[in-house]
Image: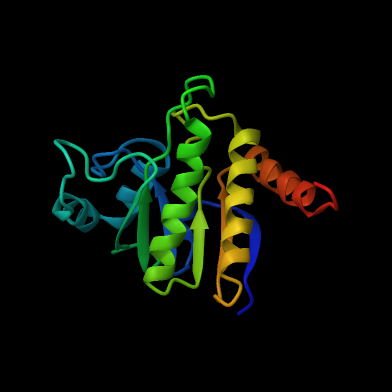
Length: 182
């Protein structure tokens, strides 16, 4: 398989890929949005697997910008890679760097475990309030940079959007990024 990027409008919990990415909170014990949907679809074994991950400090199993991997249990994917995106606080508190770190950390974990197909949700764009256009620009930039650094890796990166507006933002960013001089 050749390395490439794509966009799909779907429920990430339905994708039969090697790994789906969970936009989690630092506890990794479930939450709302995509995190809650993934935990519900995977079943109680996912919560048990997350609880088994060591805390790096009280209540924190995965600091913002990092990634952890578990099995996917009842999901059609094989693995869940959990990452914690930043809460949007206006853009002056390192949010862009933290969001970029989510993609880099997740892709490093994926590569370490031989993941060939990975699906990302719009990390931090839900309750964490990250502006969609800014977040999709970071996502596409980081995915392209990772693919360029690992050109021999056989990897398909899917941006999974739960709705037409976010899918459109990813498609616009992919098209913009493909233009000469962009």
